[in-house]
Image (cartoon, rainbow, N blue to C red; front, side, top):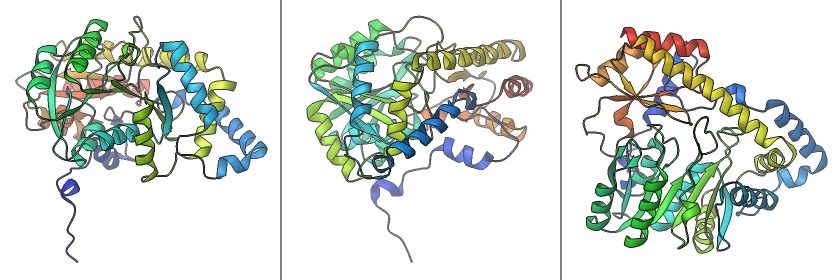
Length: 390
């Protein structure tokens, strides 16, 4: 049989990160390429206890179909959490539950973008979102990152000149892959530009609660008095990545369309993980748990940056994030990045080439992304030693 795939899928390439993880699965490889939460941050005993309680006390709700919008108690708890903790959400907004933040991003694209419409995003940016946008047939326009966020002059030029701009996709806090946090000044300027040109902002904030140094910066959604911002969050980095529970906060009119789109994908997010997430918020020491995660990631990030200073002899520039999971590392000009990645893999260290995160993978790039949450402390030190030797 000769298969004729759709135009949207035929040219789409698999995520290089997923392919690296698949290729190194089960091997004795130091996983700097992953973006997984640290296993020691999982509240395993609480999940085990809550699951037992749910299946004993209310098994039918957990095992039956639910409404597409999501488990109502969880939606109410999240709405209160975002409003009280982050001043995020207005009376005109609604919140609904999705199967991981990735689905929220994909649904936003599905609701707003026709084939050929333009999405502006940071470059580099999260490969999962870029591939989702590509699969929709959208045109991607990348705007370079600066130490305090996206380049505003280049952003305004794109908003002014690119045709049919429908979404502006941003990861403002501890960006994947760079670790950069967009300053409050730039967040305000970005919102002003979006309002000026009538473009919806898709704010992806999976790492927002993982700040381990410095002061919190208000979300762009907290500035939203015009209904311009779709805010996407997740339990993946706080509770468990495998449970696949995310959420979207946006103007009610947008949420209604996203709900209809979700019904055509998976009907609703699995009920048991939603109820687990609710119990985690209401019956567990949520704040204390987040604080413990921050302590773990501060230690691991500090260990990685200290090791970089010790073993790379100043030859590699790298970001120093205040939270999140990643470092962005610039190799010396004399080193070819892809060759470096292959040599690292041959010596048992998996890293991700920076080109994987570019809107245009053919752009020059001599950077790699490192993850400090997945490897053990011993692996961090050993892996950086190897990268330095290479």
